Image (cartoon, rainbow, N blue to C red; front, side):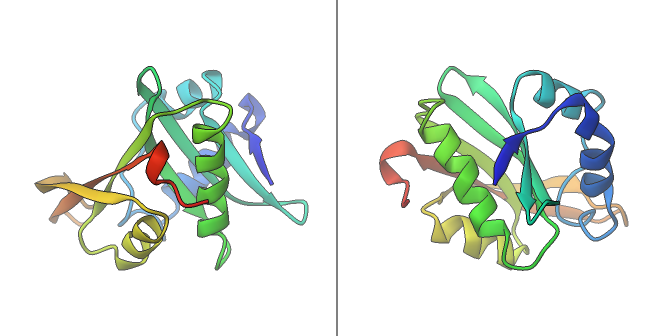
Length: 151
């Protein structure tokens, strides 16, 4: 079940976001990014069997246009239901027109997930961020329009 994160969840989200297993796939949050997402109602926890099994944060780029900042699942097989729940929120109650994200070109698992839910590759950014080990990595820009969403 997707639920809005609260200030009490800040440390948990930060710990999951910064976990070594996630460091090669998502950039560390900017200062205040998690608090801002919580305050705007754009941070969510994925509860499964009474335990947190992941989180997602997003941001409003312009009205009805959102960006997915982070998506982390802590249990195998929960990334897709978590992302489906986020998309249901974006294209349902939030009446979003589109949602975008960037993903490293070598993150095959995430690319399968995003493309499987209808996201389109919209651009290629060369050396878009530096991994913790110091290597620069390219990213794809991806986007999904409300009319393309596969429920």
